[in-house]
Image (cartoon, rainbow, N blue to C red; front, top):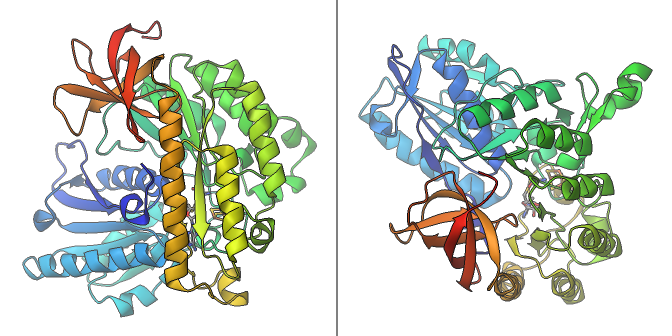
Length: 481
Ligand code: SAH
Ligand code: F3S
């Protein structure tokens, strides 16, 4: 269940519902975080207006787009390897054009055109509305680049085309960028300053999803707790807003409430929460509405206060424990997952032990764990030496992964014997005779299909488990259908 980088950074080719009349073919692959997958749905929507239908066969594409991730070096290497593959395909189809989107585009800018001869177009995460112009440029035989970061672009007015969708769960982006400046992280450089999307456009999207049969949404942002709508503009400029704007501002707790009220039967999740910005208002709102799921992805990165400080995380280990304890008082069955980095510069064996003991305290349901990868331009890269040897990083990583596996099993075991509501998302990967869905805590549940259907809320008796999956049998439809 613990995801290593190889599992998390997986490309996926995606398909657009065909728009009749469109005669150009787009092949698009996405890497990295959920935001990138969500952005590709915006890009597909913009290009549908430009005469493109998507295809899953890259050989027949007129345009290949790759939405890239810069979070770790390995993510970038994966994309470079894909470019080699696209190069080979392009040899058989000289009219084909190749564009790079996302964080690598923003980080490398026009250098990409020099480094990778196959690339015709480089487009940063805030410049997708310029794609029609950029495509015209490359159609006319010129290279095209737009990596301008924006103060207010949220794509709130673009209706995403749902790609590769199960028709049940969808992402809805609510903020873009990040102002936190964790010293290891490239995101503030590639995705720019933080800005929030108009709540009216968020609710309109949620309503539209419900009308199309979707049953669960995940509100997405680098740091959702920091959401703040005051009429548009950067979060950091809120102080300059008028009194009226301040008085009517919408924060994340309020947005959650508005969403939960707009669609009381829609399951609502959100990601990612930052311990330094999460407020008890949010927890109380979660507790108040049954349709907000009891699960929080709460990255901590390290259990050592010294390392947290060097990472510019504005929370301490004690603050984090206090937050977890308070959440559990209000939502006793709340599940937690973590992100953790091993081998940050200067990390000692004692710091590593602090991480293990923090994990022991929380006993996360699952986690995403990574070895530190130095990213050019970040504060850590500029000021600190990447001094933990690769084999030490790897060994520490293996230790936290092993401990997480133990905790995941402990957590799944607590569900055995319970009856839990599961939203069916699709057929189990391992068996055509079984459905796969999730409970409120986001744990995967597998059970025999019987007469149930995708999108049903089903009460399932949990009989057994692995560290990643609950196994059960349905006892009937839930009242929430
Ligand atoms: N707030 C974001 C975090 C984005 S990055 C979110 O929505 O998830 C996801 C995770 O990648 C981080 O929490 C961190 O654990 C990891 N990460 C970021 N930069 C890293 C680096 N330089 N080396 C290793 N892991 C990194
Ligand atoms: Fe990165 Fe820290 Fe923001 S991990 S995305 S700078 S909260």
